[in-house]
Length: 481
Image 1 (tube, rainbow, N blue to C red):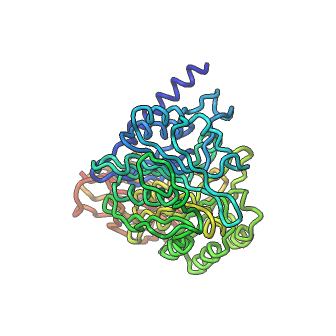
Image 2 (tube, one colour):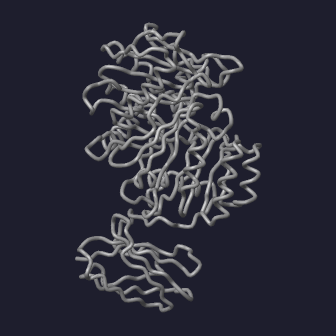
Image 3 (cartoon, rainbow, N blue to C red):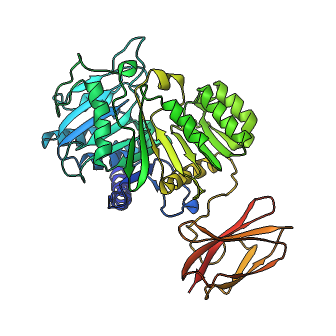
């Protein structure tokens, strides 16, 4: 039975990864999620869910390495029976094989054998690979980064890769917990992460021994990395804690919202972030959120739960964590600046002042929607209900998805009749093209509405029906021949 499971897992993984690992001229940022996603709210791309296979995906990227591997990982554990049928992904084996083929490897981790980061997986790493644990003591926090730089110094711009997100390389994180993973294929971005790695390492020699005399962690580091990049034509920001005032960027990201904020955080104790959310709610911004039960005893949960009610959901898994640390801004407003902030940084004073953390902000409507698909699935699985703002582009049929609406003839030359079976006093009809631009909007009090879209190019269009109170009613496709 174990062999059958392994074969099936490999096949599923191969299908997923063969579609996902494609870096092209305009595709240098890839997102993965460790739990199911809701692709019915997809706009242009469907989010990729790596159920129990994110460890295998780590291995696949390690196998790409030609020259260097620089790893900064809070915790690495492989010796556990939490994995299905004991099918533990052999990350250590992949790293050892890379080292054996000449890939120069360095590793920074949190204090080995600490309560929360035992790092027992390092016991399986080739002893010739240098490993630097972070310092201990009252002036230091934890080395909480989760990133890997592959071939960061390669002269070929297609080689350098940064793997990051919020997932530790340990059983529960891979097998059960809710995490997001990000992969960037960009030379400048890789050099930024290498600069931060080298500051902790205290040296820049590829595969060389760390230099404790120059090594800096936590409050002793300096802000020496660039923060602004352009990848695939989109602005990407990079910040490292505690040098880069990361919480300022968390607050300013939320403050930039025009219509919507969706957040999901494992540990949320920083009052300033809760205050900003409250401020945005008072401004009329639509806000939905998820907190792990780990945050239940902190003041922000009490404050926000009273203000948000059912729009704040508590994740209380018996054997799993909601381990994300992200905020999504305006994922459904193409006229705004849709963006995602995520990384290793929990919304805590410790992350802001003491810990070594990494954070990215991606200004990209596609990435924002991919995260929205993951958030939407988690929020509804917890019993939450959201007002539907995004126009789904993943409707499979050309007819509507709700019996309350009939569209005819469809397809045709652009002249349609919409029959609303249960119209409210005033119903709003909106039409969008496939890149999310609204091309038509009008209100009606009639059960029948005639649309003349014949001046628009042939193609597929989306209609959205809203009730008078703004509640989503239906969506579907129109086809102009």
